[in-house]
Length: 460
Image (cartoon, rainbow, N blue to C red):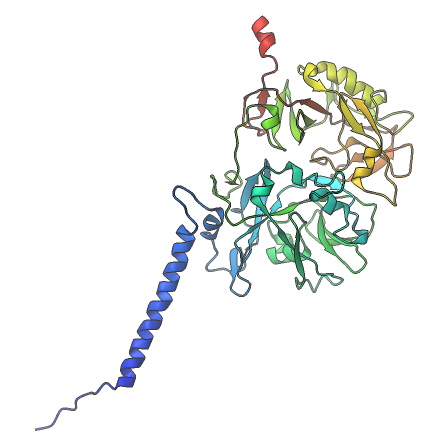
């Protein structure tokens, strides 16, 4: 009778099996924890943290598009032509660019917000762009930062690539700083997102913050290509970049264009409560909120003025380039147009800056060296959303020329022309900030309507 062999399991084999089981348990436990954190991390009772919600949409299969995670840098980056990274803050639409290793969220404005001479001759830190974006002890600084609601509680420092780039085939980010709250996109930001084929291409021309060794800055052209701005006297639009902190709560939204993430909300009872970029209806026209002060709010038309024959075409002046209420366009605005407004009694007489710039001084704040007082004026360099409407006058005088006035041309850029040339007009004026908001949500489809005629209606 044959003897059966008994298979002996050695202690080494047992140990190996146990080790394999442990590895499997640890691996799946780690994945469980990771996805639990993505789903529930940071949560307080009845509270959703924005960064947790965004991470749920990480691209797991395709690392060329969507929200892509880099294991080495611990950074999440949106790549390609994505459509789920919209965020509304302070009345302005942003696109989410990335989430850094500390879970702070970098955003860039979807639209161009102003026209400005960049002033990069002495580097980014001393540029007019940096001065316009960030508040400092310097006079007239922080025009943009001052438009942001609760900036002190929401904003963090923005990491900014400082690499000097002379060869656009070698775009890297080896040197970065977080000295500033608000910056511009860098060449590296644009490249890593996918450049021309990405959501960062908004079909307009806008400045980048990256410089070459001669302190000339790069910009994106209207067709999404990269170009070099070698003229200090060329004004190009800017799209600010901000960073919101990791603890920012999500109020509502799914990140889609028609349902953006919302991180701040407050009651709007008066005109002074509105946001920059809000739309207000007056009579049969709509106006955009450009500036909010303590006792007055600046509005500018969302379209050009019209007369009986269509769009109004008028000369700026026949003598001087300094905007005043007795120039041709100034007289029209402060008589014919003003008298047509149902809110004319609530229009506040204000300063309209008409100082001159020189090739040696293209600082937007230098126009404040001279001013005139009137009830109605027009926009000028450095004003929010100056290039929303094309083929219109500004109050910016020609550089070193007394008979030249700047207009916003068809491409949304500044163009110098004779003061006798005829252009369309985009009216701007200040209203009292305590005017009541009767209805609306501040969008073009549902503009705010003012309660200025309540007393008159009661009398009738």
